[in-house]
Amino acid sequence: MELTYTKVGDYYLPDLELDDEEGMEETPLGKYGMLRQTFLREHHHGTYTSMLLTGELMPHLREIDRQAREQVDRIVEDLKKRNNVDEAMKARDQMGWVQAVNSFIAQAEETVLAELVYL
Image (cartoon, rainbow, N blue to C red):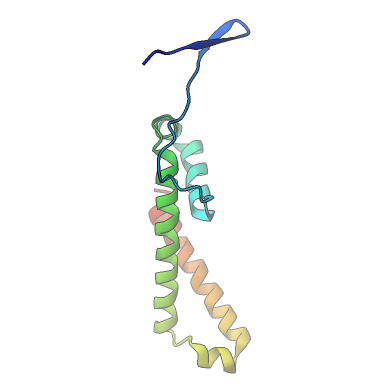
């Protein structure tokens, strides 16, 4: 493989292209993937750059996003069961149900961010 260069101003820059990986997902990053990307870029710049250059960054961010969403859903469902927040409560007291579920989501996200995204 021969490396070619392009002159930009006074500098020669290598002509680099990312490999098109077959089956690579084109799905956009979700909330947790974007938070992980920002965290790596701001606090672990070397790791971020290395993963970016080797093509490992996007698969990593998609995996973190998927795991985080699954974990949040699992935690919320568990909290709803433990606290008897069900469809009967939703029919009986809609505002109470919404408050409880929002509280559970906040608790789950706090846990996931600390254990998975900002690790």
